Length: 221
Image 1 (cartoon, rainbow, N blue to C red):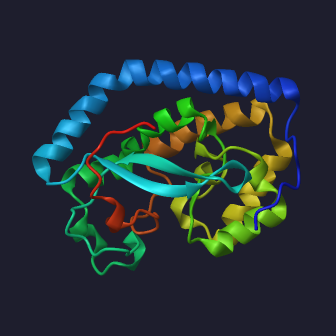
Image 2 (cartoon, rainbow, N blue to C red):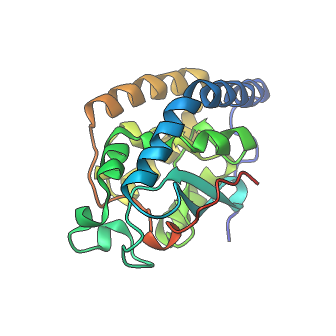
């Protein structure tokens, strides 16, 4: 059971301006990046069979589930219901295009639609898959579910894939307690550095599951 321990993190002004920025930046981002995203979609289609999007249920603000969008990075033949980190020779299930997308974090671009819809924010704790009970409990105890999950967050620039669940939960909690425009700006610049240097990237630590890769509809609903 997910509770709402801190009803209004940040000031009212902060929340209003942040949501306004989320809408504006996600809309502009989609418009500016539509051609690169179309090129990525074509590359995915050319290399392997299956839909261009990976869709999966994640847990958002106040514990509400939503469908997250990413570019598909694995072959459809990957074992069903198996997390990437649990696969033997996981790299063999990842397409060449997918490997590039993961390392560059370009597979996350479709989440701009999630931000525009209000499922997510540009900055916030990364949304968990439904089955990650340990992390759900840690976040719930700290009140992290009072804020929207984000495309990037404090934990993603402080270890990314190479920190434990406890460390990630502690970083998510630290962000909740220090939430501010200054913190968000720091995360933006930290994300640029982390992605450009691939700092903290470790294949097999991501939560993408191969059973969700068969969806072929590009559907925002």
